[in-house]
Each structure stands twice: as structure tokens, then as C-alpha cells.
Amino acid sequence: MKKIILTTLAVFAFALTSQAQEIADNAIGLRFGSNDGLTEITYQRKLSDANRLEANLGWSSKERINVIKITGLYQWVMPLQDNFNWFAGAGGGLLNWKHDVTGGNSGTALFVAGDVGIEYHFDFPLMLALDVKPELGFSDDYNNDLDFEFGFSARYKF
Image (cartoon, rainbow, N blue to C red; front, side):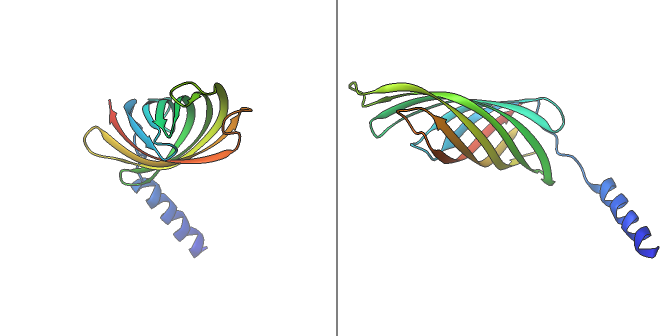
């Protein structure tokens, strides 16, 4: 009986002291990815206290291949401690590529994506994040396998 009372008090005290980290209503910024120097303009929109949508428009022009990429993700956001959150999400997108600036083959591909990461919210309107996006592409000509793209993001919250 004593253990039950102590456990109940500990859970109640934790519930009183824990605070949910606020998700910004909107956030916009840049994400720098590891795959072929991909840079993305990223926008996040709050849906609820624990969910948001993220839309990214990315481009890369490296090693004789030009890529334009559009990604949409639904994310679940969970507080860790103080100003830290972790998040996980799923979605997909579309990319268009062109090999060799002078001509070469080109095409369009669909992909599904996941997203897992950690973010820090400053007391002023800035958020920094590190994440990994596993992506599985569907195309005969371009990246038809599983890729893991690591990224760093800086976003202005408003």
C-alpha cells in the first residue's frame, strides 16, 4: 500500500512540474541536407499542441546533376526537457532531376519519406533542429533505393 501511495504521489508531482513545449504557429527557414548538398526552404504549420505539417522545397546542383524536390510531412512533436522537443513524421514528395547541365537524361520520381529529429526552441523566435529523413524512391531511372538524408535546420518562428 505504501508503494502505491508513493508511486501515485510521484506521478502526480511529475504531472504538475512537467510543461508541454509550445509548437510555434508558423516557422520558416532553411534546411541543409547531406545528400548532394541539398538545400531546402522549409515551412511548418501547427495543427494542434502535438502535431504540425511541414512543407519543403529543395534544390541541388552538384556533381553534374540538378535536382528540384518538393516534400510534405505530417509530424508528431513531443517535449523532452526545457526547450527541447523530439519529433517524428511521415509523408512523401516529388523530385525532378536532370543529369549533366548540357543535356543528358532527366525525369521525375515519387518518394515516401519519414522524419525523426530533435529541436531546440530559443526564448526569442528561433528554432534549430537536427534530423534524419529516410526516403524510398520510385523511379526506373533515378535513386530507386532507400536513402538516409541527415539535415540541420534553422527556422524563424512566428
